[in-house]
Length: 559
Ligand SMILES: CC(=O)SCCNC(=O)CCNC(=O)[C@H](O)C(C)(C)COP(=O)(O)OP(=O)(O)OC[C@H]1O[C@@H](n2cnc3c(N)ncnc32)[C@H](O)[C@@H]1OP(=O)(O)O
Ligand SMILES: CC(C)C(=O)C(=O)O
Ligand SMILES: [Mg+2]
Image (cartoon, rainbow, N blue to C red):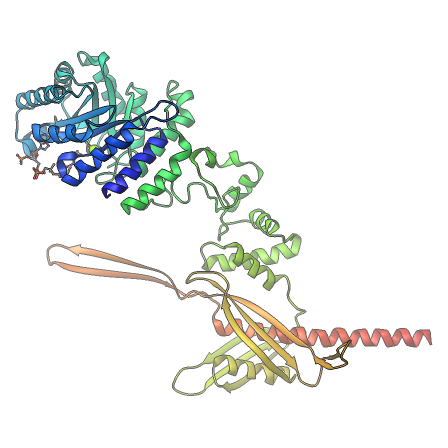
């Protein structure tokens, strides 16, 4: 993040009610020092209406220059803190620091006391890799830094190696065995290498930690850190009942905004199924769940979305897709103004399923398009059996069409044309044998995206028939028949590119896995539209004819 972005995030964290903001590592660069200083000056001096002002903290290795830089950055805050750390595990001592236990204890003691000597009254100390450190050595180091003036002891599971019961025990043991521990705050800092950072943090808090180090969206080194939103909401949901009455001062309604801001500024996008803040965390796609949600939200939601500042486009968070059921579809259609039941609902439902198989989520626009196609259909006189077209640059387009009449008899027609649609329409004309003029043909995408639903619109006019007389002008008006069909335009829904590196030969293998096309294509859609328009026109003829004949039989009777 840039300094400006860091400042924005710090302001947001203050709104969220975070107690301590560890804003950076001032020795790491001039920019970072400047960012922490800006935050200390502004956010560290802004007291909110409840009298809350966050502590502003800077991280530092156990050496004078890092600690000087940290102090230089945080000292402007009303409540400044220096956090200094040094590793205590054998593996880190031996391979990284190349120091003995005695040397590490001496450095830790000296540096905590140096930080205090600068005038910083709040000094946090971390024994890095505590999760893998020898317990007795840990108690010894921690006891020494308490004597040197540390006020918070942070216990990091630096490589996310511990299991929740183990981490809880670690905190418990530190609490029971470290001399002077009663005068300081114990803190947790859990990395997520085994996906256990939230569980470990909660276990630590339950065992007595009263500070938890977390990050928004769980960002952090490697697999990240425990996420603020997960820890806070777990404590809010279960703290009273199962964690001995724990609570936090976080204003949870700012969680969603904080998450969005951090994702945006860091470019680290949140996985859709991430707890609390993932895009899917409060959406319901499976029919059985949707039915439950419509009946009572508590069936499938443990948190009210408002509590984390999430507003949903529809109240129950229902997303219509291929796993949805009739209850959810009916309910959404009702919201859109279509009351469907029984067979009508059933027909739309199966059509909806067919489209949803190809298009991940169906929007309101998709549904409306489906409804107008499915519900407002003309009487079926001809239906499409099969269609085969050839087209391209090598010759004329040709089409073979099989139509089925009302008695179930199949009729086949073949034709050439200027394009596949023209050829298919001509083949249909050969079968139907009703002269018509095609007045309009258009295809529009009615929803967005590569897998959008498109509608084909066809307007035809019967030749020498279906005329009416304009009531005012007396002009002859030719009646036109229009029809539309829908199709799913889906060229290539997903392409995954995987690069596998083979270090031995320095080669890269690219694996392409592509999913293509929907079942319906644009020619099929166009043919369906044309057949529907013909059906409308012929249905009109039938209705008109039957009206005329029933009228004349009435006239016959009366005479
Ligand atoms: C677990 C954690 O999250 S630790 C915090 C991680 N954060 C960071 O690393 C912040 C970003 N880091 C940086 O910008 C740089 O690493 C700097 C500016 C801090 C240091 O850069 P350099 O001085 O070039 O050292 P470099 O990072 O290469 O090596 C680290 C040195 O610090 C030593 N060191 C590591 N941790 C500590 C510590 N807690 N206390 C004292 N010395 C330490 C290492 O042993 C190594 O020393 P050596 O040079 O004698 O071998
Ligand atoms: C600096 C320390 C606390 C750290 O980040 C870790 O050990 O993971
Ligand atoms: Mg860490």
